[in-house]
Amino acid sequence: MSAARREVLHRPVCPSRRQAVGSDVGGRIGPRLVLALLLGLAAVAPASAHDGKDHATPAATAQGATPSVGTASAAASAAGSSTGSSIGTAQSTASSAAAPARPQRLADGALLLPKASQRLVGVRTTPVERGTVSRAIELPGRVAVDPDAAGRVQSTVAGRLEPGLRGLPSIGQAVVRGQVLATVRPSVDPVTRAGQAALLAELEAARSLAAARAARLAGLSDTVPRKDIEAAESELASLEGRLRAVKGGVAATEPLLAPISGVVARVEAVAGQVVDARELLFEIVDPTRLRIEATGFDLALAARIADASVAIGGRAVPLAFVGAGRVLREQAVPLVFRAKGALPGSLAIGQPVAVTVRLDDAAPGVPVPASALVRSAANEPMVWIKTQPERFEPRRVRTEPLDATRVRVVQGLDGGERVVTEGAALLGQFR
Image 1 (cartoon, rainbow, N blue to C red):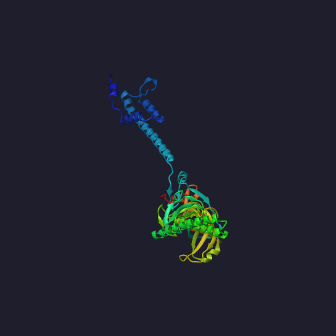
Image 2 (cartoon, rainbow, N blue to C red; image 1 turned 30 degrees about the vertical axis):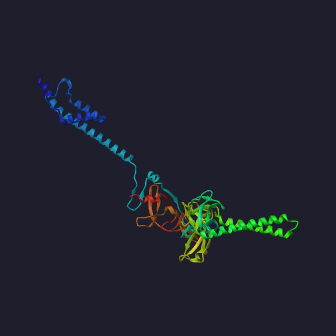
Image 3 (cartoon, helix red, strand yellow; image 1 turned 120 degrees about the vertical axis):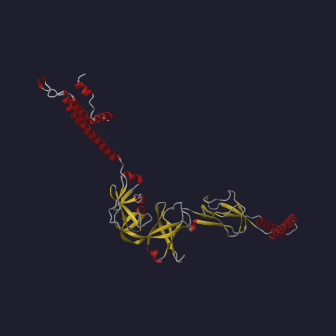
């Protein structure tokens, strides 16, 4: 083996070339990397001059090839690193674009809420306009009974309570007028009961004698005057009537009847209970004919009432004014209203309600649904305004009642804004 060939075989491999080859094996070979490798291989091959003459010795040629290989390896490493950097940048950009947007609270208090979050929260908005609306005030009230649609069942005598044929009624059971709810068997002391038994025996004996005398006179009708026969018959009939009355009084029971048709609202009776006279046992009401009794502090308010409403189950029930009491009740004037339609069956007698009374004078303002009104961190009334498709701004307002489901904004809104009416309470939870 020649010295030149031995020198080439034992020549150490350049570290940069080893790194380029390792990088090529471990990663993907891009077009630039393949081109750099081909240029490096071409540089390793011995260069030939024209006319078949070499311009350098083999050793010089090998020594000159080493820098060429290092240069090619450096170029390949640079190309690989450039390609990897480009791929990483593209992947980071794609991941940034694929990441979902999140709600963000800005420094001025506004909220950036993406459409996906708006649908999740259930945000609904409505435009509002300024106008002239009637003034209203809110009064405390309670549910009361209509005197024509309520009844009480009481016993007139003292005695023992016995169930009727259908048993004792329960709360919520529907009854009809005249239905027997229970019976009361009067309680009699032993002395009175003994006197009634003695009177009953005396009347039985007298009736027997009167019956025998009337029969004897009827057999002597040809010789006895007609008036004596009629007198005997009349005495017999009188004794029989007295006997029936005494028997009926001894074994009589008092039936307790339903005074109206409705629903049993109160039950204070059990089987076998000993009750006193005038004791309340049952209370019946018609749930469709209840009244609302509000409390006012000015009797002149009754002359200014246009109409009223009460919020029940998320909807406003219109009310008609019936009248105002002239006697103060707990230093207040009772104002009675009745529903223009049927009240919901979910109301209970004595249940507190808020009555919104609309007066006969008007004032400028912006009507807003009451559901849009929320409280800020400082416990101030505010609403959320939608200024852009994904931007919401809080707005402090001053309001007055308008009706059972709306308020009148007197300060804070100019009209033309789009106010959040559903989901407003959840917008303040984003931080």
